[in-house]
Image 1 (cartoon, rainbow, N blue to C red):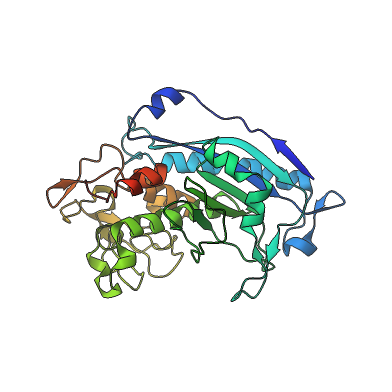
Image 2: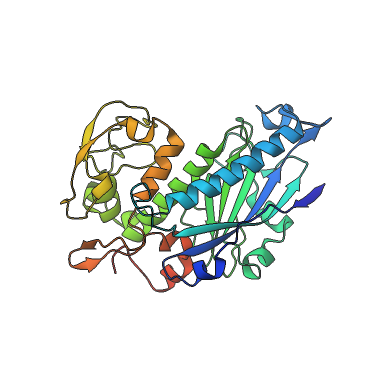
Amino acid sequence: MATGLRLRCDVTDRKQFSENPDHFIIPVLVICYFPVRNGRIDRTITGDVDAPLDDVRGHVERSTQQVVQALEQGSIYHGYKDPTARPSLQYQILDTVEFLEPLPTHHKPGHRVPMTDYKAIMHRVGLREWVEEKGIKEVWLWGYHGGVIDLWESNMAGPFGDISNSDRDPHDLPVLSKTYTVYHYNYQRGPSEAVEDHVHQIEAVLNYVDGRDRTPPPQWSRLLFWGKFVGSDHSHKIVRPGCGWAHYPPNGERDYDWANPRSVLTDIEDWRPDGSGKKKPINCDRWKGDSLTWFVYWMQNLPGANNGLTYQGRRLRNWWTFIGDFDTAMQNRWKLIE
């Protein structure tokens, strides 16, 4: 059974927003899979979710709006200290499609449990029309994990290949004339884990644009994004207290170390490629030890609109361009610097 549910979208100033070259509208299609038995989510299918269907629906709707809010706030360059700055990204939920049945799966070599069949899902919803005619750039897929299926937090397809936090299988999604990215959320969890999927996708895209995929690992510390901005190297740990990444804040000592009280001197709030930014002591109090607050704060320190930064005599782009208009950036072979 499939139903369509349209969510309210805030389209205030859409025309003004879309006419600004530093700002991008991202239309989204939401797809939900709710395997149901007697009005409840069927735990024998999900592995760990057993709750009334209406409760899970409500959780998904609230979480979806929280993800929109976090991503838009995160795209405001230094938004925590510049009240006049505007977001680089505006998300618009065009429609929500719901299926009261299990996620389709298939056997994939190397996986212990069945893999989500993303191609089957995209064919079922008629994705070609959504992407090529209605202009969606992202699909947000709400489902489950529970150890019973495998999934990719992000997955991409399009004319420029798959740059995502997946195995980058070129055949697991329909390849269309425009790029789109699928984010697979787990409704056993909440908005923080969903936003983390996006942060990992940002990392994948910026690393690709910056050439990390083509750079020997011993040289990663020299790269503009991974070495100078993040402050890491081939170890993925923080070797210079820069701006950190999803799992490692500047003071992080291990994965998911968002509540570490240790203070370090970091230039995260005044990051400059040449290392001349002002450093100050920061620990988990800055993001209240909360993962979602950390993700938003980290995103707000990415070079965004009107960042005024230069590297080797050239201006840094608005890095949100690579998320908001990936195809144009690839067509023009844009890099992180102009």
